[in-house]
Length: 415
Image 1 (cartoon, helix red, strand yellow):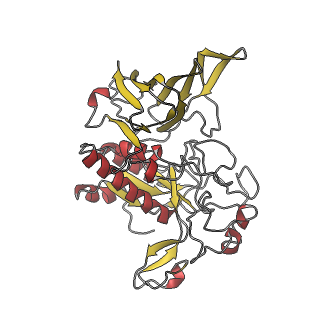
Image 2 (tube, helix red, strand yellow):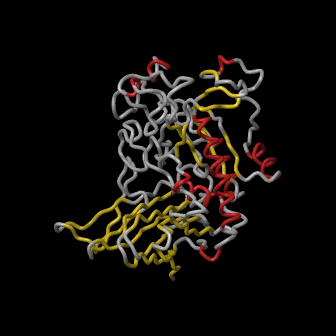
Image 3 (cartoon, one colour):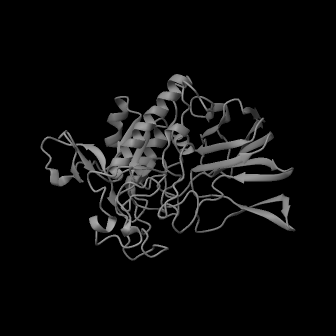
C-alpha cells in the first residue's frame, strides 16, 4: 500500500478542510491486532476534530489456520489490521451477503480458499446466509483486549465499481450486463456501506433534529445502537459474549437505527456534549450524570454510550452506564456491556439485590469506549446513571443515544 504519509493527519486534514466529515478507509496493514502508530494517528486526529467520523475496514486476514481459535475449524483470533485497532474509529468487519448467484456465491469457503478454511466453517457457502460472517473477516480482540470490530456489514459478492482498465481476474466475477461493475468481497466492501450509513445518520441529526454539528461519538453511538446481533455459528463462536470479537455489536440495521419519517415506530433520544450539551461534559476527574426514563408500556429500551477517548494505547478515560430498573418489584441493574466477551472479569456489586442468599454480581467493562444496554423494561420510573470513574484527562465529552417505542417513554434529565 503506497502513497501514505508518515503521519496520517497529513492524509486526513485536507479532506477535513474541504468539508469532509465521514471518511472511508478501506485499507490497512496486518499487524496481528496491535495498536500501532497508524491507529494512534487516527485516534489523535478524531480527538482533535471531534466531528470527523473515520470508518475503517477490519482487514481480511481471518483464517482457520492453527493459532488462537477457541474451536477447531472456526476462524482464528486476533487478526485485525491497522488502523482498524483505533479506539475512535468505527471498525467494520464483513458479514455474508444474501446473494446466491454470481461471483463466489455458489462456492464454499474451502472451495475458494482451501489453504485457509476447514470444516465446519470451510463447508459453509461464501454468500447466502445473512446470519453468518465472511470467514476472511478479521477478528479481535485488540492487543489490549478491546472489542473490535465495532460492527459488521455485507462484504461478500458485492457489486463493486470496476475501472475500465481493471482486468476481470482482479475480481470475483463479472457483473451481468454492466462492465462498470464486478463482484468482489472483503471488509473493504463492507466498510463503505457503513460509511454511507454514517452520512445518513449525520444528515438525520443535522436536518430532522436541527443539530448542525453532530460529533463522531454521536454517529458511532447511533449506528451501534441499531445493530442486529447475528446468530450464525461463526458469529457467536467461542469466546462467547455480546458484543464479541467476531461481529462486535452486530450487523448494521438502518431500519432500527433511524425512524421512518413517514411512519416512525420508535423515537430517538440523544445527548451530545460536544457543541450541543456542553453543560453535561465532565470537567473533573469524577462525576455522575442521570436521566429518568418513565415507561408507560413494556418495551425494549436500547441505550448506547460512546466517547472519543484521548489518544494512546488502551482506554485512557473510563465511563460507564447503569440502568436501575425493577422487575416484579425486585431491583435490577443493567450495566453497559455486562454480557460482552471478556478475558478478565471486573465485578460490579449491587448489594440491594439478593437472589438465593447471594449478593448479585454483575460485570463492568473498563476496556471499551462504547457501552450498550438492551433492557426489557416494565412500566414505571427507571434511572440511567452515567459515571466517570477517575478520569485521567479532562475535559471529557460523550454521546448518549436511546431508542424506544413512539409515545412509550418520557425522558427527563436529573441532577
